[in-house]
Amino acid sequence: MIWLRRSVQGLVLLIFLALLAANRPTTGTAPESPVGIFFDLDPLVLVGTWLATRSFADLSLLGLATLLVSVILGRVFCGWFCPFGTLHNMMGSLRRQFRKVRPRVEGYSRWQRAKYFVLVALLLMAVFGAPWFGVLDPFSVLYRSLTVSVLPVCHVMVSAVANAIYMSDPHLGSMHLRDLTEPFYIWWQDSVTGADIRPFQGSGLIFLIFTAALVFNLVRNRFWCRYICPTGALLGLVSWRPILRLVSDSESCNSCGACTMSCPAAAQPEKPDEWLGSECFGCWNCVGSCKNASLDFKFTLPGRGPAQGAIDLGKRRTMAAVAAGAGTLAMMRITPDSQGATNNPKLIRPPGARPEREFLQRCIQCSMCMEACPTGGLQPTWHEAGLEGVWTPMLVPAIGYCEYECHACGQVCPTGAIMPLTIEEKKQVKIGLAFFDTSRCLPYAYGRECIVCEEHCPVKNKAITFELRESKQRDGTVKTLKFPRVDPELCIGCGICETKCVFQDRAAILVTSAGESRNPDNQPLLSGASDSYESFDEEFSDDPYGSQ
Image (cartoon, rainbow, N blue to C red; front, side, top):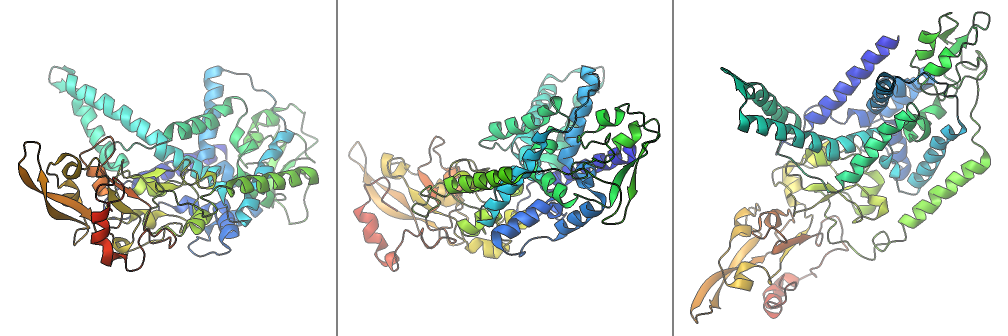
């Protein structure tokens, strides 16, 4: 059973990584494989999003299957199928192999109740429309960490090594080392990354959190699963008295403690009447370590079977967790952005994103949309959406633009925070508005020709047009130049004009969230304003931020 469990863990981890690679950016097409299947199976995503939205719309009900399996078999999802748990197991194995540590007794600790308090706080926040559980959900943590930090780091390392070997061309006779590295490098780009290196802002902090979660296994085996994981806490509540239970033969047991030292969950297998089903991963380590065959898992009828231990959360501690969740939610909601008093100009959401409050009720910070974005323009937020919206996606045109013929972000979103639009529907959605900084734009500021922004504008009838004007040069001559201007009725805020601008430090044409289709309160143009647009432009033509 132990080797079967390890084989299943390895296979599931490989499937997770394969689906991550399958979500690689491909312009204009959405991934055909079920890249979000793990989030569909995640019960915390199902329960938390339902509490926040009061609806199962756009949600997969496969999470109910996970809950049902947990009622019958206990927390086997954590012990057999969670890819993040598999990485924790691997770290624990490395600890034993490299440090040659002597097995030590790691009995149950009252601090293991912390994950239940974390769950209570997160579910309370979800009830009031702030499903912040995506910050700690194991699938979101793993997918976000691999997408934003680990994969880019690996890409830099692979590229550096492959380029170095290609340039130096080490060889022995007719055998060239690059004949081995180049096929791997091509496979890496075609099948894994799918594009050149895509940097992500805030990747350092995400990488640090991910690394710390793994390194803590050197302190306690499966530290994250024992003390922090809210998904594990939810499954623990469901599997409080599972049908598959650990039974012990007290006559043959010699109290050697081998089962305790092999238990990664500290589920008290050494105490027949106090075994903690809500903590047990069903890993079979205790059964395999018992030389007297005193332990085994057996199916029992509901309501019957051997006695079990119970975790006493305590009313006061539970109420403290409720108060912590309420206090955290209150702090999130006191900012001007959360109260709708302001609209952050940098907060450009992907096309198809729901209105901000509904968007935050559904987004689980998984970064699947960022992985699918072919230009790398979708980036994790930090402070732009407040604490409630940390690590949610936003478009940063200075890094990458929204590809006109692509709608992948909405197709891969597992919760419907970004609605799945067709290509034609997506082309009609405005996510922002471009405007010129006339103190930097070459025709306005320096009297020199430049039509880069208009050339790259993908809109059919061109949202950027030109007005011929005479510009007096320093030597007194008069030169006719094309002065660009933005048509606010056609601009969709895709950001390609800002990305491609000749200014690389700060573009002379900028895109903000103004005019986004999803927000009727963030509309800078009054009804009928287009009729007086030309006179408005002429009046403010000398103002760097007022010409458009």
